[in-house]
Image 1 (cartoon, rainbow over the protein chains, first blue to last red):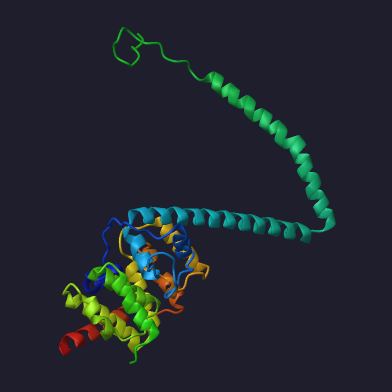
Image 2 (image 1 turned 90 degrees about the horizontal axis):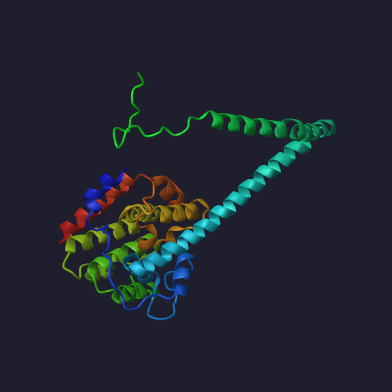
Amino acid sequence: MHQAELDDFFADIIVELEEREYKEHPSERVIEDYLARRIKDGSELPGRDWDLSTVSLHIATCPECSAKIAKLREEELSRARAREAQTQQAKISERLKRFFGSLSDRTQERIIAWDLDRKSTVYIPLAYAAACLLLFLISLLPGPTPPVGGGGSAFPKRMM
Amino acid sequence: MGISKQSLSVEREFELLWGEAEVVRLAYGEHIIRCSEQDPRRVEGLLSLDGEVEKARKWMAIALAKREKDPSHIQGLVAYLFSHIGTLDKAKREWLIRGIDEGKVKLEDLTYEMLKGTHLEWRHIFALVGKEFNPTRERERIKRIYERLLGER
């Protein structure tokens, strides 16, 4: 079932609350606890009579607190993404290690020797050749077209 | 049904909200997602503070549907509806979906603010509920209860 199908019955009760200004805001600690889902129904919180619903509906309607929590969420996401990338890298490295370990000693030696050999005999000369080719191609590029006439057309004059 | 400690605190909490019926109704929606086993008729007055009796009855129908059977289906349905409020907030959506996929977020942790703008898909809701259900059937069930409530008046 799609949202559109649900709308006809629920549209007037599932509504977006308007933003408003508040004199009092939940503390940084309360916002952090809320984000970490440490606040439960019935939790006793410092300050005003904050509770899970009052914190939630305050943040949802307060631009200031909403911006604060959005920033905290972004930071949490960045940390999670970094952890994920590290884990992924470690997994790949582990798989490669296992694969390498599963090879016979002779094959391992050959791969190491081939790799060293490739570095000195293939990659370095190849990089040198690529740099030379690039310089040669740059030298073939035409120079800038001299201006034709005084303030005339930008297109070059047809050569007769 | 006797007055439980939980139902008292819920009523007190609603009174502490800004005294606006719309906010009170959405707070009640949050409670439907998280808990609230109390009789919805107890909060009928609070839900219709602004005279919007039909809106109050719709929320009551949702709460009664939850009490009747398959509470997790109704909790999931309300969570889905809340998630489609407002424009898409990509960062919040990623934050919430990561939490769901990693099993860190439970239905009882969710709030209006956490869900709003996340535009969850049904698969995320099913992951939260722990099983698949037919949302259309649940919607129809709520509608039937709502019509029954209208007939009672």
